[in-house]
Length: 241
Ligand code: FPP
Image (tube, rainbow, N blue to C red; front, side, top):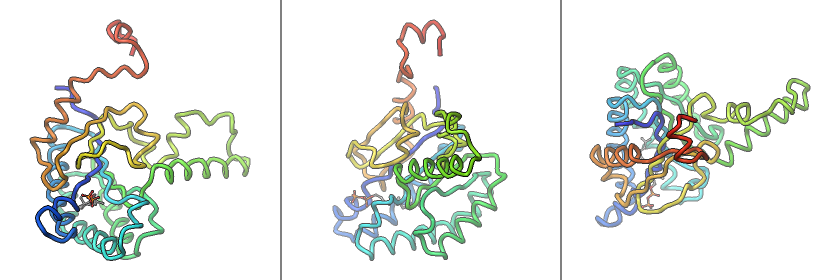
């Protein structure tokens, strides 16, 4: 079976999972840690090169302060708890997003996790925290504009490859497969540039119930898709891609 090189996931439905059980939303977020672990393990096992998880969007800061605080605490605890195992499994960890919006206690741990796993050769895991696709594109445009203004860069040399390289995931292949749980069918400001030709797969399963079997269903659906990248089927058959 053709396995995606890069999988990007929006983990949605924690709140509803908890509310349906009469539990506080926090319980849903806590229950959402297990499927994160499952996805990392399964992707590593199946030879997926990169996995990018949307943990907290730029817009999630608008949630009640208590929920934001709880999520940040959960990320901190999960990082402290899981980093040894991730490092031991050869996972390379990276965080993408506006770090200046996060507490120092968290960003220090994030930087330490990145430094510790930088040379690992296994699964390239990126966790998007305080991330937005528009933030990413705007940041790239600003950095390039600054370089042009400083005379360090010729604007005419900025093509798609150069622009893409400036993004948070500029050194990784674009996602082949995008998964969103929780029933909604939208991109929600995730990896806007990178998802241009990504295969989209939506599931009604709420994130805390997402498991290896469900991931396998997504991979099976991906393997069935014909990826044309703007070409025709006949061109692909003739080996044009
Ligand atoms: C969306 O569900 C989920 C989040 C905003 C948080 C994602 C966090 C986790 C899965 C916890 C573990 C993560 C890591 C990286 C350790 P929602 O709250 O929007 O659910 P709803 O749509 O049902 O309200």
